[in-house]
Length: 88
Image (cartoon, rainbow, N blue to C red; front, side, top):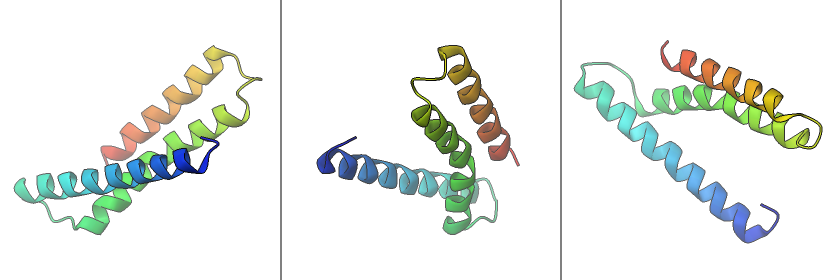
């Protein structure tokens, strides 16, 4: 994560995963008879990924100060928030 080459690879991978996920969600919604556009699916994925990003940021900043159990609790709460956001 410290070199320019690694950060570009991580950004590209996340960018492609978000777009492919959005396309899959849009196609699934259209096949089930829903009325979501591609941009609405991107917003939904962004909303569901936000808690995971916050948990990642917290555990990265306080990596040496937080015990493993606290990190697990933070990640579990963010996963539950993301899952609840996906069911709305």
